[in-house]
Length: 154
Image (cartoon, rainbow, N blue to C red):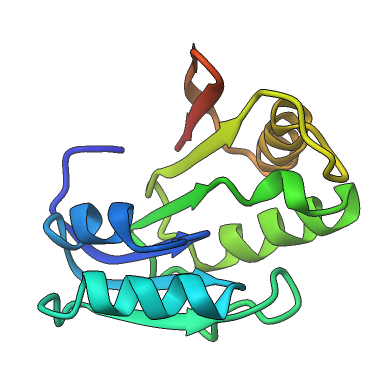
């Protein structure tokens, strides 16, 4: 992710808040987003004692959080990209790049097993990374593990 501490972090695909809790310990403020109301309810309960986290329900990329350009010191996108169409992945990359502070890391986590989604996790990550590279970012790490892929861009 980077050394931290981070000022503002954005977590897209926060699910039940497990990563949110860990991220909150490394940043002053975390905006955590998911589409599933039930998952967000669980995340709010799981992180009830973490006053640094604001949870939002949003359908991405259309309902991307209203954040100032260049305001995010860290962006984490976990288990989300492969649910999106290729066009939506490119749109999300553009929106993330707009709110990312220059030099701030973007971290992707994607399942690489079989899915019935618009893209595989590997294809989705590759599309996102390609869009970011087209916009001048460098890939610093890609790591494959049993069933998932991690990418870090900066």
